[in-house]
Each structure stands twice: as C-alpha cells, then as structure tokens.
Length: 432
Image (tube, rainbow, N blue to C red; front, side, top):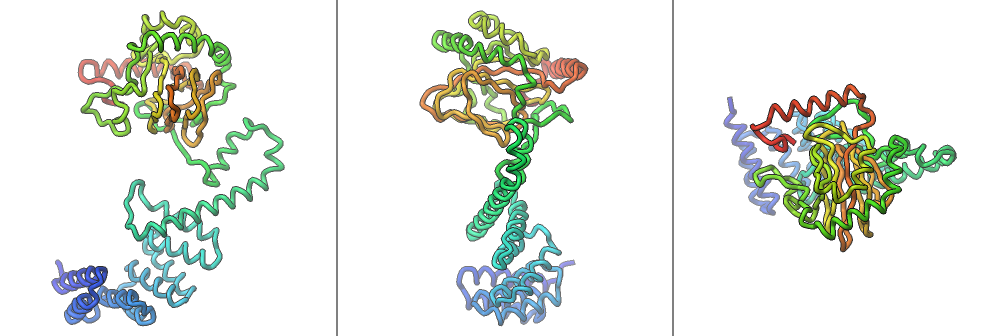
C-alpha cells in the first residue's frame, strides 16, 4: 500500500530538483522546506538538501546531509555517489574511493560510479587501473544508446584513456615478443597476431552469424589459408581470360545485369534499403541457386570450365551460385552476414580501381587482380568502391572444407527438405 506522505515527499523533491536544474534556486528551497515539514527526516529530503549545498559549491555543508541520508538508507547507490562527489571536492581521496566502492557493491554496472572511479584512479596516477575501470564503464553502455550531452566529455575521456592504455600495452608486448616473433613468417604468426590485436584493441572479435543455417564447431576464420585450396592457383592464372569474358559481357550484355539486392518492398530492408533493386550493385549470373544460366554460360565458356574445377557447393535449388559482381563508383555494400557457414565464398578480382577495399570481421584488405581469396561470409563483412569507375569481381561459393562427406549429403537433403516444406506457401527468401 502506498504511503501518502512518502508519495508527497517524492513529488516535492522531484519538483525541487527540476527547479534547481532550471536555476530557480528560491523555488527549489521553498519546495524542499515544504517537503521537510511533512517528513523532517526523510532520506530523500536530506539527500536533496545535500545536493542543493553541493550545487551551491559548499561541499562541507553538503556532507552531513548525505551521511544522514545514508544512515537511514545505506542501500541507495545515488546517496553514496553524491557523498563520493562531495569527498572529491573536499580532497578526501580515500573516503571518495570507499564511497565509490560502496556504490559498485550495490550496483556493479553503475555507469556514473565507474566513470568517477576511473577519473579518481587517473588522478592518483594509476592509469592502467583507471583504463580497466573505464573499459568496464564503456561496456555497460548499450549499442546505439543516446547519453546526456553533459556526459559526452566524460565518455570521450574514458575512450581516450582506454585507447592510450591499449597502445602502451601493445608497444610493451611487441617489444617483448619481437625476438621470438621475428623467427617466424607472417603466415605462421597469423593467428597469434590476431590474438594480440584482440588483446590490445586493434581488432574486434567477430563470430559467424549465419542468417539461416549454422553448422556448429566449424572454424571461424575470417579469411582462409590459401594452402587449403590448391585448385585456386589455376583460376588465378587464368584471370586475364576471365577478365576478357567479363569485359565482353559488360560491354555487350549490360541489359542482362540485374540488381543483386531485390527484396519485396514489404520486406524488412534494414541495411539494404539504399541498394534494394538498385543497379549500383549489379550481377551477371552464371549459376543461380543451383541452376546453370545457359545463355550466360555460353558467353563465358572459359570461366565456366574453370569453375567446374572448384568444389562448388552443390545443394539443389540453393547452390552452386556464381556471378560477376559489379559495384558502381562511390558505392558501399553495408555490413551484413551470409546465410550459412556450410559453404565459403571465393572472390576473384578482375577490374579493381584505386580506392576499393573489403572487410571481413576485423580484417580489411584491398582486392588485387590475379589474387583470389576465400572467406566466411557468415562473419560480418562489407565493401567499398570509393573510386570514380565500377569495380568487378567473380564471386562463387564452395563447400566449407571442414565439412565431411556425410555432412555435405545431409546439408543437401536438408536444403531440399526446406524447399519442399515451404514450396507454394512462401518464398524461402522470407526466412533469410
């Protein structure tokens, strides 16, 4: 049952805080006096008087109000935080630390307390401990959260402290590791270098996030080692022939190019709104959802013959898929994830102007004609063409080499089963 006195006090205190925030000091004092007459020893009133004194610049007068409020309610994190701020202004270092630790004992994810503790530690010269505390503070902020404007400088200071600490750690570890790391090639160090980047803040951890079918326990490589795909070298060596077939198609069959993104207008477009049904990202299919596009293949016989030598992901009505991908000038493909990690994606760069790059997870690299690569598209990836002319690559899918023959057979059957279950009821694209 609600206590009418308590409800009245809370209303008056809230009104007093709003009046104080808008600079109406006399009105705030009047409201607090009215509240105190109703409940002289209410902890909220004592805390409000303390804040009034603190805002007036009198931390010494504020202190006893906060201490009396805490004596009545020592589980209120806001009271302890206000007392900590009071101690900061009074220069009572140890008392401030104790008060902040009491806040965090009540609420370990209290953003303001973590930020203040970080600043407190930095003032004591404990920069590494401060950075660790700031890191914890930043981790409590949800992605996309809108924070009060007055908090922005504090957040920026926290970000800078974390960044500086990571740079210091990175420099220290690189110097310590150099005698050992210099004994090994870049490919031998690749996984460890990734580990070091995660530890020191130069890379983020990305995990496969298939939008449809996820096979667990498969490796989560962003880009796969070339040694797993010996057949790729022949395709690379034939890059000039593939380029020639593409250029003929691009010059003579431009009407056959179609938007790669083509969702119904009622679909939740999210990041695809700008590119949906747009020829800024267009394709020329050689295989589409497991079906050869005969007319197109006839135009590109050498490319088709080369692709036949790859372990294409043959899942009826799903794969293989292979196409020339044309990304228009000044166009970006937004971050997204593929449908399944049962297959990987191959890029064979063909026409690559300056200003084109590609990111998978925490690794960004340029395309170079004649240098193909294989990646897991269920890890978030995106692409840019910042040049003034189109960029073109050959894209096709292959089986993930870590799938057994049994798993491939089961994936084929699963794909057919899914198609049959939804056939005539809804398009499979609605599930992806």
